[in-house]
Amino acid sequence: MNHDHSAQLQEQIKDAISNRQAVAICGGGSKAFLARKVEGLPLSTRQHSGVIKYEPGELILTARSGTPLKEIQQLLAAQGQMLAFEPPLFDDQATLGGTIACGLSGPRRPYAGAARDFVLGTKIINGKAEVLHFGGEVMKNVAGYDVSRLMTGAYGTLGLLLEVSLKIMPAPEQETTRVFDCSASDAIQRINALSSQPLPISAACHIDGKLYLRLSGITSNVKACSSTTGGETLANADTFWQQLRDQQLPLFSNQQNLWRLSVPPTTAPLTLPGKSIIDWGGGLRWLSSDEAIESVRNATSNAGGHATLFRNHDGIGDIFHPLPPAIKALHKNLKTAFDPHGVLNPGRMYQDI
Image (cartoon, rainbow, N blue to C red; front, side):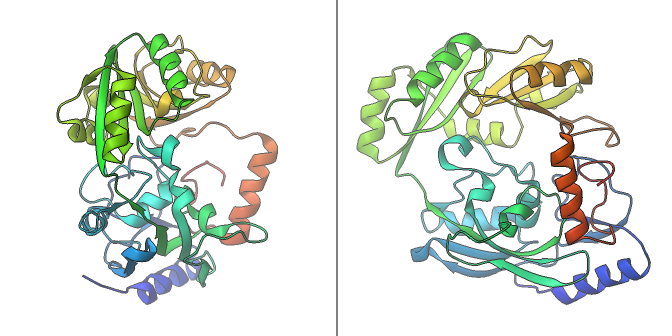
């Protein structure tokens, strides 16, 4: 259903500015566990929903921020299309706005692109209660900041998303997943070797002594490449990748801290206690561990990466990897420019921003 609540949302932000009261922006609440807790009046975008424009032939979709992500996926699937960055839902309450605000991408990300790569334009309410429109419905470079992509992964700290325009992709004609028994070290080497070949790889992960390699594309090519890679065919592969995407596998359900470690794909397995999953062809490591925060961050930094405390934290301390001074100053300047009164999700990403 189509519901335009932009005027009401704008009034709520105006009131927040007048009352010097922070607001805690939320969509469906499926990702409320992410980042830091916000002390402020709840501001929900859930009722601001509906697909505004969808042109399958142009591979473009524009929808309001509160539109359920599942509804969008079903609409696209009926036309043989998809969101190529394979965003996690976590549950059926996930919205388009929350997906883009958190900037999360699924297993297909290193081969198809990240969420921000598919954002063509956004309509937002900034911290001055102004309604602003950035970008458009074609991919183009602009002078200065690409604000639409800047909103991706900003966790609502720079603006409340009203609408998002996305580039859509055709769904693959055929997919198959090959499984290999191997160690984590061997899996990293094999993934990187295979990635240098002209293979239609769309996902690669290592879990519990097994490497899972997904091939997607034209049926004849997928079949030919399956013979080249070897391995066994995984039954119910769609369910497996959905459970990895939405963190429904056993590693994600225990009570230890869950870390999201971004490292160069060729990085050897990190010598940290706990259980881990290697995703994104080696570039993403999920670590379930009670190891001290500084130890995890130091090990990840030494590998040339950064560590995010993803789940099971208290929502108070540092969640994201500490920023270098120059980058932190840039973040503060952006926050001041977009939200001079500091009313939009203050402290959601970093304590003093």
